[in-house]
Image (cartoon, rainbow, N blue to C red; front, side):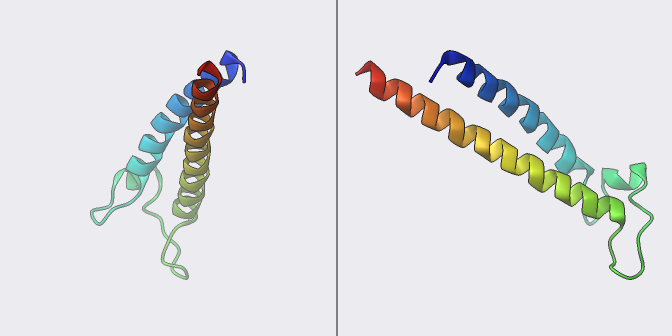
Length: 86
């Protein structure tokens, strides 16, 4: 595979890593978390969780899947590069 693939994966990995850290910090913990600062304090009485919190969960899972795919893709690329040099 070409070298631009590795640069793309590394760039995507850095971006998703920063996003993942920010999204995890926005989640509400036992003490309320940072999500209460941005409207996460308004919760639905039916489900016990707000719509904002559910969307935050979805975004976190999506970014986590992209992050994992970047790591696997970079590992496969590195393995192919190591096997082609020997």
